[in-house]
Amino acid sequence: MVTAIVEYSGNLRTHSTHVKSGVSIITDAPTDNHGKGEAFSPTDLLCSSLASCMLTIMGISANSHGIAFNSATIEVTKQMAENPRRVSGVVCHIKVKNENYGEKEIRLLKGAALSCPVAKSLHPDIKQEITFEWI
Image 1 (spheres, rainbow, N blue to C red):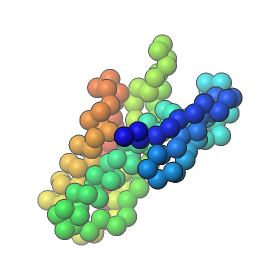
Image 2: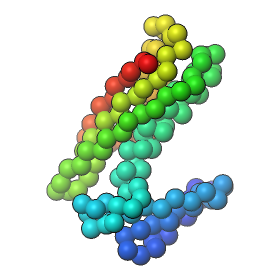
Image 3: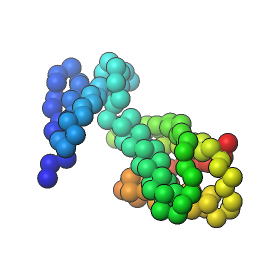
């Protein structure tokens, strides 16, 4: 089954529609690569996908183990390289509301984040710098 339909809209912009839900997003080329930067760039989405995946897998793992997981955010920083132009690194600082977690819960949540499908799909040349803060 088709996951999404992506159309080029002109002016370095794309329009993507998720087939099952009908939800749409746009992308723009970043200002440092001839674009307007009025929306996420494709490389921004790559980095945001990593963060979204980590939080989702942490939530699934928490639910599976009866662990409260109610509030978490990730600050994502994309690092770019030239020749060829590519994402060279993603820095993710994960802030999790500490629900009185012990060592076992923290180890489980960290492991879930680090083993998410997007993290495992990224090329090994893309450095993933992941830090955790329990607040």
